Structure formats: structure tokens, C-alpha cells
Image (cartoon, rainbow, N blue to C red; front, side, top):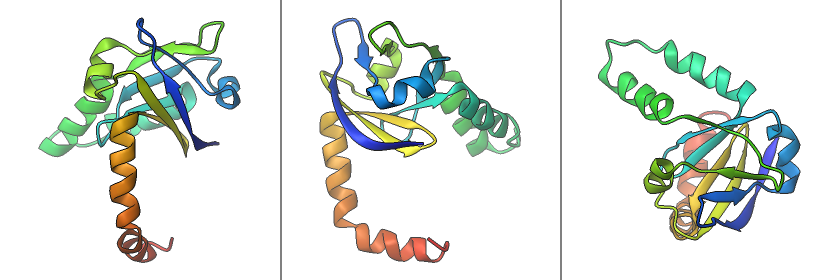
Length: 143
């Protein structure tokens, strides 16, 4: 299970250190792809397989499902940890996530999200201001 918020810097080669507590789960490789809200999603291979199968099963006749599947699947890239526990984020994904120097890695149970630190702070500030409304809407879902 991935949880927590971790601050790291990306180096000039596009590498970022994965928090030590997550390395064992990712040691057999991982998949990084475009996420939502201008972040990146990082999945274990096992979790990615589940997501990819669901995306591949979406109806091709619906424009929004095609678009979402393209966003996630076409943007995906296999990554592996180097000896220092780093992954390389491809340039096209760094551009998508507006990744500059400081990044935030957030654990969200079955995936990690990678955010530009400024985008994360803005997103978090906005979300925290709306937390009561969000909680109220989630109560309808049994949360």
C-alpha cells in the first residue's frame, strides 16, 4: 500500500529517487503514465495490468472512453529502479506534468502520483479549502 507525501528533486537527466519504503514494491519494474490534474501516475506492473485491462475493455464507440484510454495507454512507459533507487521520467511526461526541479511523490494506495511541487501545493490548497463539500459528496458513496 502506498501512502504519504515525499519531496524530492529531479536531476538534469530526468531521474527522481523513489522513497525507500516503496522500492521493494517497484523492484520488479513499474509503469509511469500521464495522470489527471497534470500529475503522473506510477503503478507496479501488477496494478498496471489491472488498469490496462479495464481501459482496453472500454467501448471504442464512445469518444470520451477512447480519449481517456489514449491518455493513459499511449503515454505509458516501463521504468525500472537503478542501483540508487531512482527512475527516469521520460521528457514527454516531464513536460506533461510541468516537472521542473522540485517534485512531490504522493502515495494513493495502489499508485504513486508525481507532481511538480508548485502544482501540488496549489492543488492541495484548493482541495483543502473545499474539503467539507468534497466530504459531503463522498458521503453519498458510503465513504
